[in-house]
Amino acid sequence: MRIGVITFPGTLDDVDAVRAVRLAGGEPVHLWHADHDLRGVDALIVPGGFSYGDYLRAGAIAARAPIMDEVVAAADRGMPVLGICNGFQILCEAGLLPGALTRNAGLHFVCRDLRLRVESTATAWTGSFAVGQQILVPLKSGEGRYVADAATLAQLERDGRVVFRYVDAAPNGSMGDIAGVASANGRVVGLMPHPEHAIDSLTGPSADGLGLFTAVLAAVASA
Amino acid sequence: MARVVVDVMPKPEILDPQGQAVAGALHRLGVAGVTEVRQGKHFELEVDDAVDDDTLHRIAGSLLANPVIEDWVVTRGAPAS
Image (cartoon, rainbow over all chains, first blue to last red; front, side, top):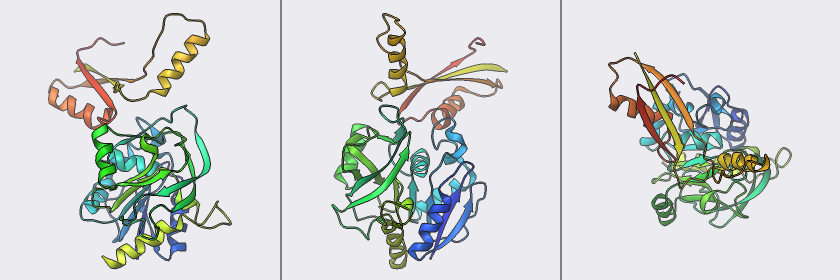
């Protein structure tokens, strides 16, 4: 099972995402932002960092990078795509996920381990969890406040597309304490916290995050 | 060639903590009478005369601004700042 991990200029967490894929039992494939080639992968991860220095808006320039044409086309075909932190911002800017991520309320960069509640297991990335399960993963972002208009928020809640929620009040002021959302078909998921940093208790606060990477292998195998 | 200015502002309902921080700093400096600050972006484009208004709005709405959270105004022929 080949899982692509895209590197943009300024991406930081591609190495940890590759490691997470490998630990989960997948074959990680490095992808480069300037290419138009997904190298035959079965799923895609858009990792965290500060692509293009967060110029203009976080994720705005990366969302228009050459490889994103292929990412959008693949997502339209149903390929699983996961955006983590800056990757979530990129997927929102690319129009693959609704809403936007804005400057944290209170302006502080938040870097801490925190609990998320899994709100939906009906996605390509969360099938290994149980609804209501809590997972412990790090959050590290300055522009992680999830916002969307009232109609969009109501639709996300109604359709079960809120995938992760902060257990304690969102430290960034996210609307509805939303930490992650999914596309209508559940194949594209984005979240601000970092599951790829929580795959091994030796190097992270838990191994809870590994569940996303094992889940997508099962989702691809059953497709 | 003409100068086009695109001003981008957070929508009124979007929390603007940066603007609030500026307002707080003004308050601490003892400046009276400033009740609110909202912070946006100001773009100056040099464009060929062939670039029409539709194109300018497409540029603004697809890249310079994020329509989910921001409004924009395109002004043609604005004087250089």
